[in-house]
Structure formats: C-alpha cells, structure tokens
Length: 68
View 1 (tube, rainbow, N blue to C red):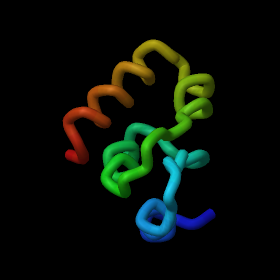
View 2: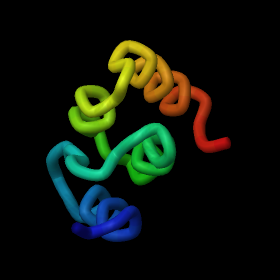
View 3: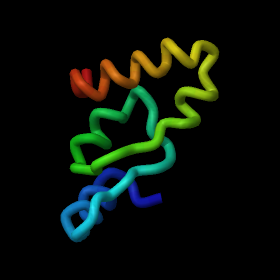
View 4: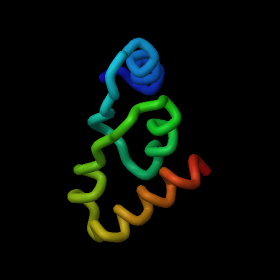
C-alpha cells in the first residue's frame, strides 16, 4: 500500500499510465483521481455494497464532483 502521496509520486515518475487498485471507495475516489492516476479499480466498493447500482452511481458522482 503506497497511499495517495506514493500514488502521485508513481504517476509523476511513470512514462506509462498508472492504474490505482485497492481501497478505493466513494470517500476517496476524487482524491485518487487527483493524483493523476489514469484509471482506478473500485470492484470491492461496488460488489461489496448492499446496492451495487447505487454504489456505482455515488462513485461516479464523487469522481466527477470531487471531494465534499
């Protein structure tokens, strides 16, 4: 686990796209996007939710709108 600072550093140092995987949910998806990561996986946040469709919608809203 590298955290947001480590992810941002990896993005800056990489010559290829960086994909963030692990621990990403609605509470931090906008922060992950802010690191410059090209893509991110939110499988547990969606599949582990009581309402996967609502979870996916919330992740999308938070990704587009940013942190609250």
